[in-house]
Image (cartoon, rainbow, N blue to C red; front, side, top):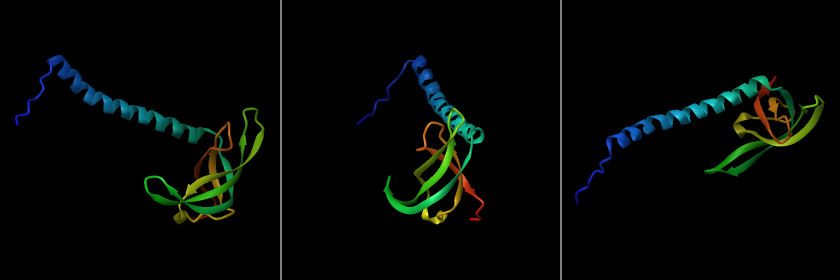
Amino acid sequence: MVMLRQKFDPKVTRQLTIMRVVSPLAGLAICAVILGVYAWRLQHFEHSVAMVEAVWNEEVSRRDAKIVTIAELSFSRTAATGEAIPCRYKFEIGTPADDFRVGDKLDIVPATGTCQRADIIGRVGRDH
């Protein structure tokens, strides 16, 4: 069986070659912008200290079964009006190897409009 190679017009070949280079570069630029905005948010938005009120391990199914550490955190976030709003919500905070305990304090960046989302930066005060 003879395989025939499809011949394109030189202009089309040139455009395909350019697209093979431009497409990954555009994707890389978009990822860099998203990561940059996320890093800017972590640096410039108001941080809060969250207290671990309860902690337990759960098995979750993503690609395979994995055990993660879930904690109920209490913290306060600042509303657009400037008032402090107390929050208490459950978050995935790590794995059993991270050894989180009730009473641990975490540095977080809470979402501005809800208590249900926060970015956990790390522990405060306890040596790991």
